[in-house]
Length: 247
Image 1 (tube, rainbow, N blue to C red):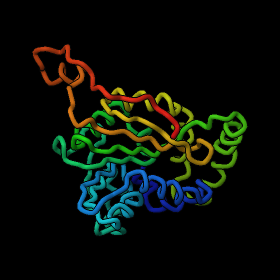
Image 2 (tube, rainbow, N blue to C red):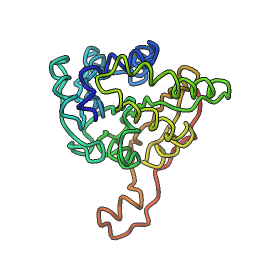
Image 3 (tube, rainbow, N blue to C red):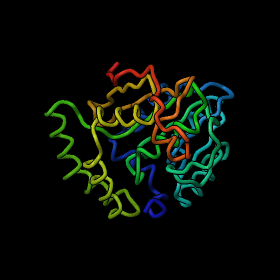
């Protein structure tokens, strides 16, 4: 599906977001705070639109995506970004490789988001940063109603004009409907082992920016220990976790 929409993907997203996608990307880059020389992984990076600003900041950016069509286009558009074909649920990188991991509007497209979060945790260095930008649930009823009307009535008309595969974008609305709210995603992030978990709403909560840290001292969670064949699965979960908040 993503191979089929790759050619007009970025343009369609910009129109569908009513121009807000630029501000969302800017907020994401600020949350990541890329530093020169850092290794940053951009998961479900598509054509690399979210990866390029990180590379311009001097970071060594790896963009991973499961769609060969997206990667091919991304390599042509952003030659300074390393593109790797790979599955978010089985990232092709060693443990403790990256200083920061980010994913923008891609986590809800993964078959098992919790597994993807575990993989992001695995490839991060101790103390590494996680930043997720994803569609969410406006907390105020009036904004939820307006957003619902937009997804149901306006977005299909816009897609017919701007997309190279309008039928594929029916999936977009469905995936947003089914996606959990800010609190639930925060629980998933903590469950993957992250500490200092927090989120901030963007555009009245249509989008939320989630953050977390891999603790410097990490104890394996029981489920991970069992999968790795540990003799004693009864280890404790990471400490120092804070409840999700809206800073």
